[in-house]
Image (cartoon, rainbow, N blue to C red; front, side):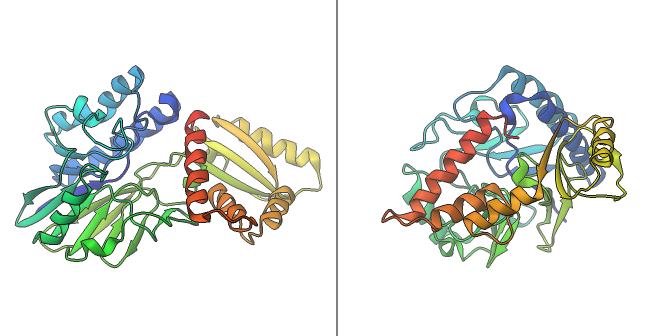
Length: 347
């Protein structure tokens, strides 16, 4: 039996290398390495976006990320195969300069230019770095000619959810990879599966879009093909739907970003006491939103169940009376939103 840990987009240094995010990550990776040690798992395949910002790495990220992550590879004698993702590479048309290669440690094997095949146990794995104009034709040829059992990469396939409620409408057709028993991919941040493709999701919450969306990592038994999802026990975002007279365990908000959605409030003093109880339990931040405002926005953009900002933006574009290519426009709007979230500490 050979067990492999599949780890999705890490985004080390997210939120402009905020120590709040590093502290949260540190708790998860303590849990992660304890699990690997307990189950004698000696191989990690990291599916891309090891780092968050492709153009620069904060010194605090290098220091803290090594402390709670990379140094532990050596401590537990674990090899990590790190696949370059789009956030790891400096340019959009080549992977030649990337943070994964430049900051690699001795316990890391980097896959950054062309697909490679490795053997784990008795099974063969094809590893695909971020596909760009420079390696596209070779990646397609490699997939069509391969006889390997599994593929792992940082793929941008169309028709899969990027976040809950937001479907990617551009990207490659995943049928190119239909010969594989299973394809595991990073890149999109929510877990989804269709045909032989499994997007494994991110190990940790990064923004409010991740609220109530399971995070963690996967363990694959290469011989049996059985895969198990191991959920991250820690969360960073807590949403409370306030109803007057409700009971609530206020310890749940400790060291979290909190959003209180006011559903039913008639007594302001009771509500103020509730908010005071939240603040006494040391949240990172508390925002209060009136449910009537949320409903008004949802009605205005034609969404009956407002799941996320991305869904709202997508719906606004869909409802616009314009002659432009709405698929490309939505893609650009969502890219700008993602970039704005990183500028605004990703919270």
